[in-house]
Amino acid sequence: MIRLTTSLRGRTLLRVAVGTLVSHLLGLVIYLAANASSISQTREQNVVDQLATLTKVFERLPQDRREEIANDLTIERKGFRLHLSDKSDVDPMLAPQTDTTAVRRMLSLALGGEIDEQVLADYRLLPAEQRDFTSDVDELNRAIFVNRVAQWFRFRETLTIAVQLSDGVWMNARIRAPPFPLFFSTGLLLSLSLTVIVVFSITARAINRPLAGLARFGEAAEALGLDIENAPPLDESGPLEIRQVARAFNGMRDRVQSLIDDRTRMLAAMSHDFRTPLTRLRLRVEFFPDSPERSKMLRDIADMEEMVSVTLRFINDGVADEHREAIDFVSLLSDLSIDLETELPEFELQGVRSVRVTCAPVSIRRAFTNLINNAKQYGHSAEIAVSLAPSEVFVDIRDHGPGVPESERENVFQPFYRLEPSRSRESGGSGLGLAIARSVIRAHGGDITLHDAPGGGLLARVQLPRV
Image: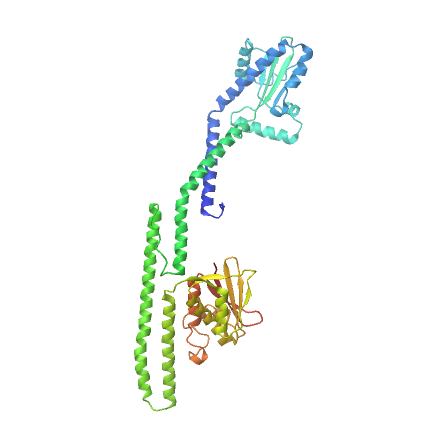
């Protein structure tokens, strides 16, 4: 379903439709304003022909039938009223007959005579006459407003014509023809609807291909963020602008990949090269006589070797080309809990029998191993709870330790950052466990956040997309 206010396709189609309607209506208004005189003359001619026919009919009718026929012909809702009277509804002293010369001439010619006092007409809308025509005050105000608009467009709304029959009786006819039906006729609505449908369809088809290109960009960017090494290049096809953007995107992808490869190779080389001098230092210290200073030096060398080993593992975890597959996530966490000697996870699966996650199994196990070990080391326990969302799985790992201050919760994910000032292995390692865990989880399209656990302690929440 097209979202008219939020999607690019919906907004484009909505604006095109509104623009088409506005241009169509403006063109109609300009046409009517330019041809108002011709339209008025055509309407007057139709009125004259009808009244000429009615006059001839009433001349032949007996007087006792005339009133009945006049009432039958009166249709108030269509703006036509006909009645017979001993006097004319048009006062030639108040109504300027020069304004109705054309109507009077056409009617006189249709009756076979000349313009004289037997044919009177008036275009003015007199208050007294209007009250006779309708008793509704709101309708009166509306009619006066419409009449003013009609005069601005040079359309005459109400036409009163009085024709004196041969026996002296006046046949008074009042015709209302508002200009608005010209704007809102069935033909106009049909024309507008067809125009909007055609333009809507053509525009929708025209923008489908560019929008498909944008969708490809989104998918390519998502794949690049999840697995930059295996993300395929963007297809450089389509219109010229789409090809240019795709070419720029692929160039950016290649440059980012090159920068990451260079950085990784440099760090790996540095970490590897550190082993040689560390080994020489250890050999030299081994020849020192036993003393407290010798023991401290050996511990420092061991810590440095551990840091180098952890750094190499961190680099390898980031670049390892591990095959991804859909695995049973419940079994993975259960087996991991048994291996790490923690309580089995608490699952809230909402009736779902199988929870499958597409991942690199070894990397995911390492990430959760780091999180669980971190909870056991600093919080003295690890409680695991698993819950589901429509397209995601959440894993909460809780401990009962002192927690992490809110201002430090992002810092602890930085490599080599530790809240414990010491970097000795006895107090907690080198500070890469959480960095490795977040790197792996984010590479799978998820994330890790830290929160205060109810009742104290720290809660690490892992979110992963599920199949």
